[in-house]
Amino acid sequence: MDKKVGLLRIDVLSIGLFGLAVGALTLGFVQMGIIPHNDDLAISIICLIFGGIVQIIAGIVDIRYHDQLGGTALTMYGFYWTSIFIVKILGLVEGFHWDNVLFIPIVAVYAIFSAIMIYLTGHKSLALMLLHIFITSVFIIDIFVKLNFSLEYYEGVDHVIIGSIALYHAMITLVNKYTGKASHFLGKPLLKFKYLKSN
Image (tube, rainbow, N blue to C red):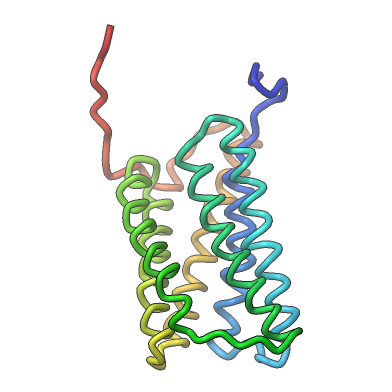
């Protein structure tokens, strides 16, 4: 039992990653041309709810469990998806138009954040580290897309890979929790912290 919350602790990372999987796979299929762009409003709402709101809720719960790494990642990525798709929905419904250059600072900041997360998740599991490698690459590609380079298809491929890894991690975590058995299907971490012992 977690004394702080009075409840049996659950792994909310799997909930956040499930939301990421739905958002990233949906967006990826759109960018690859599999889902038509004429459904942009419905697509944006799906991405807002799953990629944004689900991750934020999971992140807040993770912070409540005192998991700074998971809580920070989930809430920050959740706020990214939420802000981007609220802006997109406003553009579709109200006819607002913003220049792509406006989004370059936020995308660049998230590229740096994700690059740091590669190192940090390298201490958790191989699957999480791979996830952040592809998240970092999708932000880098998106910078070039915002500069009007025609790389949307490759961005879509990257999103599909992100969604697939997130879904895999979420499902394996659920199976592990349900069966009570630890498995190495997420891959052993490549890095190890060296903690200093203190009195």
